[in-house]
Image (cartoon, rainbow, N blue to C red):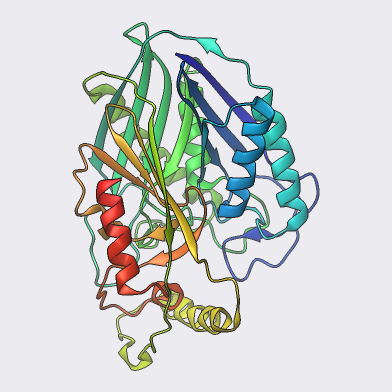
Length: 384
């Protein structure tokens, strides 16, 4: 087995807006945190797998497919599988900026093709998880999910030497206020910085779980940078619990599967009289934004018609990658001791609410998938 890890600085060399909130219209150049793409790569005599975790809101499907195509050509190997994931920070560079996307493509290709591998022999990995509301819980008034999970995967060489840890947590990185005048990797980036400081000999990465309905809205004490740091430190303490707990070691597998799915849409009228009286000011504000976005979607040709879902069975656990902002309810049919559901991967898609979801929320306005499409996605998530 061969392994390489690389951190690529993806901060834009020119001013851009942020991406994640409708009010972010100012071009900025100030970075409170470094923004990275963390690239993990494993290869053996049959398989070559890359995972890229980038501090951006999302990486669209076409970008990912072009990046994979180019890497295959540059490295002269058509069997390479490349997974892109976004940490989904709402305070990264604007992914709708064509110049930034071009720059991002260039530096990822340059960085990935220059990676230097080390032979590490047999690799084993462990998996552990726990329920947590350290940084967030359901952001919808009156709706509890109990599916907020922290997951930790640790990779070992020579039986007992850890060299890589992947954190998976399903909470929106929206602790900061929408109008902060700087770029930030938000809590995922800060947690990784704490982990790197704790152990400089281990590589670290982050994947965002099924967080469509989960944020810090009812957990945070404020939306300043120090409030984000407070919650990140709280999550870091729970990560240390999982490190000490650890799990059984399993030989690493590079078992990768991917399917392309056609997405069907419909615009069902939304009854605005169903707005509840117990909603917060912020929830009411996002519902108004939702009406604007839905009107734009109706007039747009940008509705996503295809999605690529994938799975990587590591041996200790299987990770299922979906592009959408999927609600945590889609974790319910899964055995969470064996499977992790990751969002914002191999593309980007709007929110997917559970079938028959009764609450009127912002997410309902952008969810246009048919019931049949959701049923199809549920089956793939459970079986891929």
